[in-house]
Length: 276
Image (tube, rainbow, N blue to C red; front, side, top):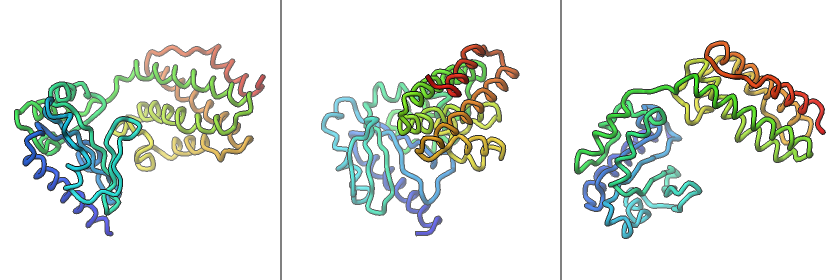
C-alpha cells in the first residue's frame, strides 16, 4: 500500500467514524487526537479517539461491536492503560477511550500543555451539545512546558533513577539495568534536551521525530546511551548516560534557576565507577 493510499484509508476511516457517531444516539461527542490532528499522519499512523458516551448508556455500549462497523477487526481488547485497542483487517491500529460524557468532556481543558489540537474543529467529529467543541478549542494554542519547574523536576528524576541504575548494576542485574536505562532514563533525558533546544512539540513522546527535531550532537549523545544487553556494553552506556544527564543539568542550571545536588551527583558518579 502506498503512503498516499494509506493516508486516504485513514481519512476514509475517520469519515466513516464521523458518520457512525452521528447515527448512534448513545454518543454525545467524539474527539480525535494523535498524529492526524497535528498534520503528521502517514502510512503507519493509528486512528485515536475519545468516544464520549451518554453517562447512562455507558454500561450497554459495546465498543468492539461499534468499531467493527468501521472495518473488520482482527483484534480488540482493553490494553494496560484501560484503552480499547483494536487492529483492523488492513493492519491499521486504533486506540479508543470509552468515556462518560459528563465528566469526560469537562476534563478536556485540563490537557493544556500536554495535548495540542491546532485545528480543534476538525478534531471534533461529533458534538451534540457544543460542550466538546468549546473544550477542544482551549487546546488550539500550543503551550510549551514551563522551563524552570520542568527542568528541576527532570534533573531530580534523572538523579534518582540513575542512582537506582547504579545499584542495579552493582548487583549484577544487567537485563534489568538495560531495561531501566532505555525505558525510564532515556525518555527523561530527551525531555530536558528538547526543553533546552526549544523543540517541545513532541513532548509526550520525546523520541518521536528525534532525527528531524534535534541536532547531530544531541543525537550522537543519545546513541551513546544505548546498548545491547551485555554486561560491559550496558555499563559503558550507563556512564555515557550519566555524563549526558549531568551536562544537560548543568546547561539547564546556567539558563534557569534550578538547584543541582552536586555532592549527590559526585557520589553517583563514584558509585557507577566503583560499584560496591
